Length: 634
Image 1 (tube, one colour):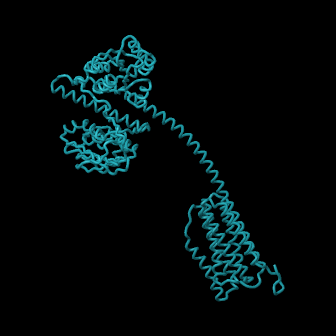
Image 2 (cartoon, helix red, strand yellow; image 1 turned 120 degrees about the vertical axis):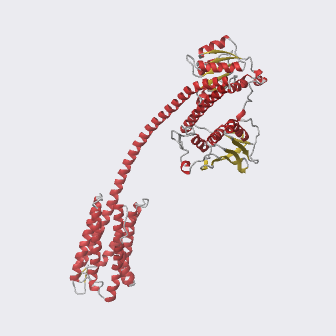
Image 3 (spheres, rainbow, N blue to C red; image 1 turned 120 degrees about the horizontal axis):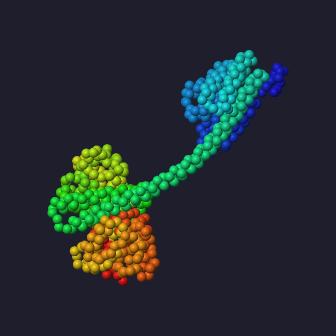
């Protein structure tokens, strides 16, 4: 306050601008510090508004030393635009978005330019009414918009903020009328009414900042409560997931056990069927009977392949699949495939061709048996869906880098082809392109999914290209290590397979073998195999009888079934290895269960080898030759 030229008490309204400057600077810095790590766009707009107001206040306070455009027009634009940014901040807080409101932005620009007209035409007597009118319109518009938002907003401080803007708009409206009475001017003395209205506006601005801060803190507390609830729900979900995982593991274990039991129950009669048919086929008979038995034998082997596919898929799905990298010869991989499918190709008059790149290293390191399974699956499909023409199997070198080779294996046929639509679904388990009752081609739809899964474990994938009625190309790329030691014994032919009519079988002829098998049909099959191989044998039906017989009479080898009554094959083997007189006896386990785990248990119990049912006479001859031939004896 001060005494004016007329001797009356006057009020210095300019003193309020430093106060407003300090308020907005403090609020802006405080919000910036509190929320700098939180990317809150609402706070960002509010802080920007505070700094714009600070700049405008500073320019207003120093307007007498600045050009009119900066000290009046730009300063008042920053002041009024800061209010608009505050509205945008509140809008984003309540709605999560904001609108452009181009009309209001033009309104702010018009307000700033109006000051230039007032200065130019010396209408300073109307400056108070002018400022009051524009600010009243803007503040009331902000109140109206926030009030409408509050119909959906739940924050109580947002409602209080709206009423702050209403109070501010009414003060500006009052100031507009008082200005017409007291003629607030840019220059000269200011009355109490001028000072009072600006003081009330300053108070409202302070309240708005307080309400906004309280609004943000309330929302932060709400967010923290919500986070606590989400964390609690997360813990519940984790607990439920752990329970469901246990149930899933139990179900998977039950499934695996079920498949193992089914496999055992199916393989046991299959062994009898395949074994008896293979023996009968070695006998003289009419062509008609031989053709019928050939079909029975082929059908039985097809059933065995389907059973193997199901077990392989179950093993891959349960993540019990392992890749075993060992040295192998690529030519043996192709030779095995040719031996298996050459007859099928010949029967359909299909030309089967194999080619290996001349630059291909001879010895590689990888999983021979898994690769053979992939190639045989793909080659089997090619023969199945090709009625005429040719099938080409090739291995090509892409690049050789020191000890590694990148190669591509392709199987190209001239078969019926696959439509582009069906190419997208061929990797789905149990999917058949033709599922109708009249479909021409058999299968369970597991071959390609198994190939894709095997290759994925080798950091590769299967590529299929096809054209209807032209043919199909299946290919995959591999990166394999080159075996530089050259100490390879081909894994596909670990022991030479003797011809049953070859004189080399005299090495095992007249050997004496004990057979422990409780299934009469399987025992009959094994007995016929041994008779054909000129090997003497005695049979028992359980592990206890096996132990008693071995202690009474000497034997050169024991064939023992894993699952038997009274004393099973595992228990019997462990007891045999504890008896000094027979602890070195060669033991070959027989089982319809062919899982890696079961084979491992057999070998850990003390068995020398394992033979999975169903097996053919040649498989048995190979095992016997391995363990009974004099070349392996010390």
